[in-house]
Image (tube, rainbow, N blue to C red; front, side, top):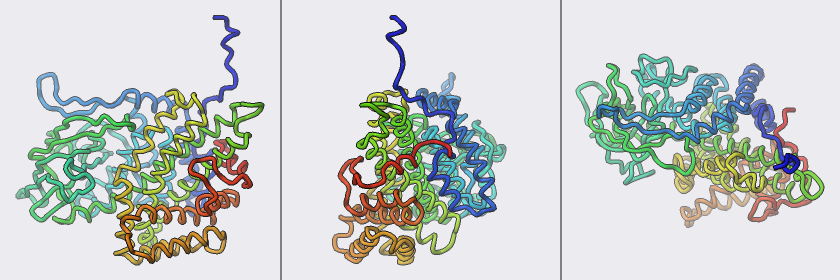
Length: 545
């Protein structure tokens, strides 16, 4: 074939070699907004370093390798002895090690720790999402372990360490450790109170032997796991180490790895316990109460992880449309494509701003902020994670046939997009959790209304949406059947309030007109044409400023 017939033109260059943090105006503004001045310089430096790594060709290649070479289960050694090990590609360990070194399991006692970690999690997830699971569980386990000060003193320094050690050894011999969890069982799923795993107490204080199974046990090569089992006093939380203090392997039979839609780099396993040693965490019969703060923290990571997928999808779409020409000019300048890109950018910005606001509430730690989180976390988890898949699908379409090809990276984003809506309780679970908070915790509703009320008077569409929401909240007739509608409106009003207060006027105007004012269709790209869409798209363009 003559070389002249294969001239490559009109192709967007790869979006590589850039600072994922510095090129995200929404995220950089959020970090500046929520961190005190004395923390900003150090936070910016750390996030910029992580951002450059996330946008590097090396990290991109690690992501490809980790997903093209998924984990493999090895149940027995060559002699027939059970080993129950999962082998990961070296790229997985590089991704996970880089994340641990960057402090993505260390937030609880650092000044501004949750804002810094959430921003870092949002940045690094854009390199590869699958390894975020063990990071999230390790981070979220800390409040549950603090129920038992002795256990927390032993394990918390390992979980918040900046050292990643992949080998299985007794925790006491390591300088860094990761935790997984196994809550659900095949007969119950989210209904963990129907779990059948039994916990028989031993003579040692707080020691038990577990017998049963777990239908989903994520990251099975972690150093320990938080699990639920039925003790004599009821459903109880336990810490189950993979390796016992004497160096022997705990009974932890991995039956198989799940063959998943996405999240291919991460291992999710079915495991069996048969006389498996575990340490009780919290009181017998208080298992759900013990893990509730852990669940809330992982739900925030679901919001953040979805915001990260959205941001990367939008960045790729805007980048492609900036360089790709059609019908006489760049795609990004065409009115209809600009409408689509602006609509996607609005959704992404609203998700990022909300995730960072929740992180700031964690750092504040006040009674009112904790009450706010009780409603805001499940509402955000419900809505943001549900918006992820349609956004990524539309962003993929912006690349045309190029986006449908694996090499673009967009199919991997699309396969990953539904996960966070399922993990830690699917949509109905989140909606019902909001209802429980409304019915049982009046302080939570007050805190939520105070938050959205801070923007009252700034936009008439937001004001009307708040009034309509109050009307819905006052009517308890058929509340469960319409819980999704109610929670959707709560999330949108909250996002609108945050954007009106903090986003540029063109962003807040477009969001309120479409999401709250009814000037919107059923698909992306249906914003009112009179809005300043060019400014919205330019704000989302991944260029360091």
